Image 1 (cartoon, one colour):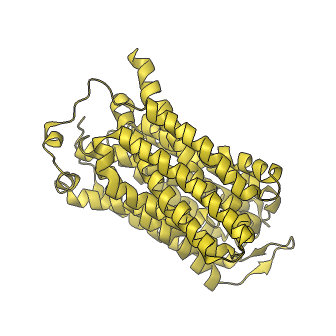
Image 2 (image 1 turned 180 degrees about the vertical axis):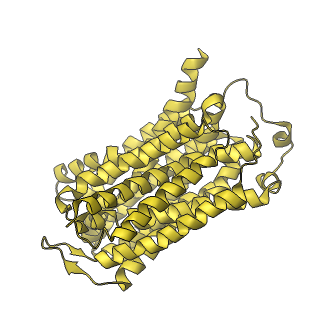
Length: 431
């Protein structure tokens, strides 16, 4: 019965929660439609996504103690906030369509998609993680990787559904889609909320019952925590810097006709990295080793494209083009793997007491990276090189995209040094 329960009480509810909130990454599919419908530029509406990621991380940081104390309350908060934020976004898109150019509609989308949904994202992301590690104590990485892979795979699953809805719903399809999906995702998340439960024989450590704070636990190894936080932040920044330019890079190397398919393939690598790297880390004596592997692979793939000038080659050399694709696959896999291994790496060093709160504080790195990764890459692309027509109506800047790699390879090297000298191999494996 216990074997059955760990799937019903942990794995399935985790997937229901993460496959719902992970659709936040579908923003690029409908951002242009929203901009056109409400009468604002795409760049103005893009801030809604940045705010969503920012508040995801910050809500996780500030509400980690709520998750620690009561996963049922936190998962219910997640379901309500995520669905309400999505429904509110639909309402303000409708309002913007009726009042073109109204600042009320834009601000309403920022509040609903950015802040309200962001709170749902943060609490929903955290809620099942500790529960999974408790049920799957022998394979913590596999368990958390499974759930976080659901977050990464959500885009690949939901993207074609959303595109089909936008086509079939006709005029006003964009706001109708949000209202419909708000109901669907609320039902999914509410079911996850009802099913989610810690093992009946689990009792919080005495220090937790006495009210020990997450910061007190972190202070036992402050350098290690700072190192983990920095590794996480830099890996996300590098990932977002390249992923945000991914479609244009694919078009730049002469594969414009396959941009949609290849974006789905990279999403699979993202999800696969979350599950694969975390499951692999379960077999390692030191879980930090998996981060060293991620950074070494990322450095090697990036360096090869820099040396061959693969992006500026514009697909003239097939081998160089393949190297660019490998880079995108490796970065996506490493980006996902960086996420899935954080809670288990933290538990190795700090034990399971207050792990939800400690994990939440660490996710503040995600919040800050969400505001810097995309924007830094966009700044480089807009200020280095020049845009030209690729012959198919796409304005591309090969030099700009290539230049982003100099930043990311530097940050990956810094991350590797941090993993060796700040996080190290000392750990505290406590249940």
